[in-house]
Image 1 (cartoon, rainbow, N blue to C red):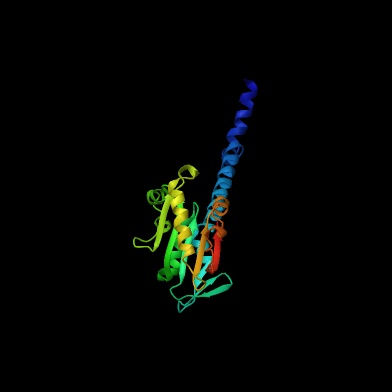
Image 2 (cartoon, rainbow, N blue to C red):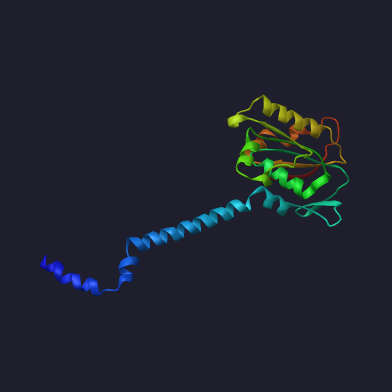
Length: 205
């Protein structure tokens, strides 16, 4: 007890700042700062691969709107651009492509997971949705990542579109995920006995 009474005056005379900000409090503040930095890094990484920014980095139109530029290659546009896609992120990718290319898209077909449009609407991600009168047809299927009749109908619709194209047409293929690329290899959709469309690009997330 006597020892405690001798130490007490020293505590009273000591500055408050080291007492308040040392030890556990400082460690807590440091942890909070690190958590904030980690969140910023995470959000930056996610933002870099969002469909909109990614497509805008890969696709562009020349000022007069007659040529499509895909990275370092250019393609002439004359009502000959078609779009197909499959995978979890393809709905947002197709929406971004539609925003960039506008009326140049003659027709499109995409295959996406069941319920993804409702999920995007519920999350308020309108930029991930196609326009009301879009020329891109959306098939939802493969609930719980399992093949089903809806996914089969989507694959057949994509195949039918691709097989109807000619060497004068351009086909933009959007792929999300390695599983989608393996399940929908380009050679499945080549027309047998007719010239295939010009492969504009296969953009993969």
